[in-house]
Image (spheres, rainbow, N blue to C red):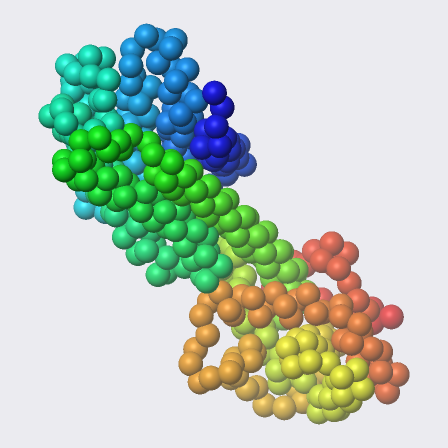
Length: 411
């Protein structure tokens, strides 16, 4: 007979198995493949455990195998295997002191003990795993509960340590996973309390009561949701990082005439990305002396007329100054002011910004290069007699020779 508890368990198993398949298929590019595989294995075993622990599955398994409580044994063993995978995930991510050999040996010993207790008393005892009246049933349940509670607590502590060094959004995904483990832990603790109660009242049953099964199912769903959320956030961050890298490389190509004409990097090998970042900063600081006061005045007028916000106004200011200074440099005009050793990124405090924030700011300025406000500023400057290069994309800029000079038509 199909029941609500079985339906909830099957639904949670479907969610866990779906997340397992998604991780194996869509996260194959993840560098830390070992942690990914451990987590996928934990989700797989968790889904199988929920299917085996559903009351409908237990009734069907007992009828098909003719071995009472055999499906319950499978449920316990697979659930313990899921926790071994979670321990492997923590080992790969946080480098915990517990080695996987030790974890595997502990699992093998406990699994062997459970199997031996089942073979000795399980088929003959109609209340095996249900009450604590028989020593074998009591020992079976105690071993299972101690193993599970110990590793769930260890996982929660390890995941909490991981969350300390992550962003707030990723921390929310870890929180969901930890919450799922916590819900499962509540179910196991309640089951342990019920086990102790059976020592006094032998008629009390403990095997997979509704609350414990629902707690396991809800915990699996929350854990899978946390895993999926963290993966989605990571994909968004990777996409943002790719766009940021492309923007910085485009800005590097635009600023290439600065070090090509100045000869600052003659004789060096082809620049990697980190060196390109340094070259962008060097060129940016060099070009600050070519920013004409008239250009700064025009920038202030356009920003005021368009009523730009503070962040966009800062991007437009930096991009317009950079475009105007680059045009003056390429056309051989004299520096308008002494060079200033100022960090081009706006700083809200006197503290040095972190590297990621600096890169984000460079990318924002690179993307603002063709902003409508920047284009309007340069058009107004051109009409007032200042020469400015026409807008060009990275692909349309001709390649420059190392150490050579570049003089393009300002048309």
